[in-house]
Image (tube, rainbow, N blue to C red; front, side, top):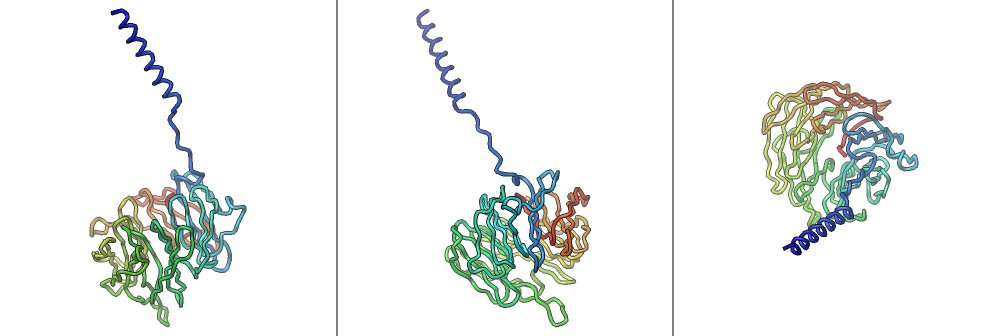
Length: 350
């Protein structure tokens, strides 16, 4: 009996020693920060049309500090360019679309170190979207150029798809790419005119248009945005506004009328909730088919708009000096005011 007890005790000690050694040999690994610009908001400053004054700013999630010119600071004071239109994200990369220099600068989204540049076949690039195998960039000069360029994952040009009137906003959703292919023009007296009422769908399997959706009103298409399953389009004039909810997989369309709301302009998505802003700076959210008034933002020229983690970002755009950005909570209280760059036009969660 004593011998059995001694053996059992020895076995227990050996097991405890092995577990202890194994624990010491395999410590828990802490996730290292990806870079200085992780967990915050990237702000795009469009810059002037004829001067290379485009810049990028950053604020952390807690809004505690602001860092400007982060592209130049992390790339040997390189000049970004003119007319910084938008940013698109794919994995750890951010694609910075500049429509006057006809280029897309690709950087690490967390360090802002440049990794590559796309220039091939670009002509006034506007917006960008991604599928697993391709990059899609709209090119639109409001005159003769109206196309989507397609590139592979090595940034090689694949082909272009031409459109009749427009190639503006573009979004990938549920395996398809949706393109805003109509919008706004003016008559000789500078009155707004709709160019048409179409949204086109590209099938990435063929890189060809497989569906054209014609919206059922005669209003101007103002904006388009998408999540994983739906594409949202806002149309308006000076007396009416509508939102269209397109099921990405099928192309089926639900029209949501917005009675009493005029001049709906800009869309935003935050935690699966849709928001929009009107030409009068009024902010709304949408619950099912009901628009709920939130508050009216302060801006002489509301240029950039987004909703991120419940906060509403609105830029009062200036093209002669710094723009002013006001960040509101959901009740309309200003939580932060920033001076940013020339023509602040976008806010992106990073």
